[in-house]
Amino acid sequence: MRIAHISTEQVMGVKTPHNTKLFAMLNPTTLKHKNLSVKCSDGVNKNWPLGHGQYTLAGNLGPLVPSVSEAKRNGFDDVLWLLDDDVQEMTILNVMFVLKDRYGKL
Image 1 (tube, rainbow, N blue to C red):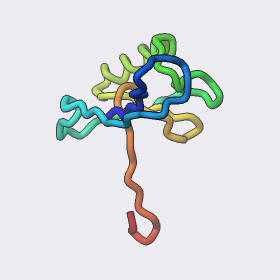
Image 2 (tube, rainbow, N blue to C red):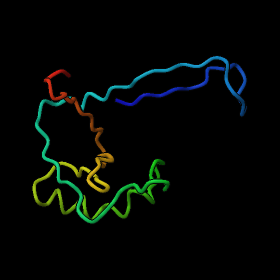
Image 3 (cartoon, rainbow, N blue to C red):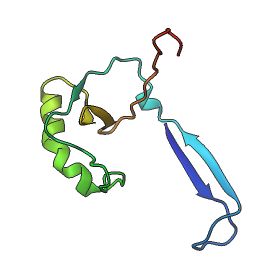
């Protein structure tokens, strides 16, 4: 799922919009009922705090190709990128968690 927030102003320009639209796009190819096998990153980081990894740029993904290729050769579907044991994101897939507290409540 990709969420987009766009301006719907009548005139194009750089300013704070007064009319906007928020919508979600669903990609049916990712809605397969298949368990994914993910490899946790080890020694390679996708995003560093205060870095520029939050932008989708080819320069951010290029250095990850060897790690992703190795994971796929070993039977994994994607890499779960960690930084100091905290989950950052996956390479091309979204990752979400449903957590229970110690009392079993979602």
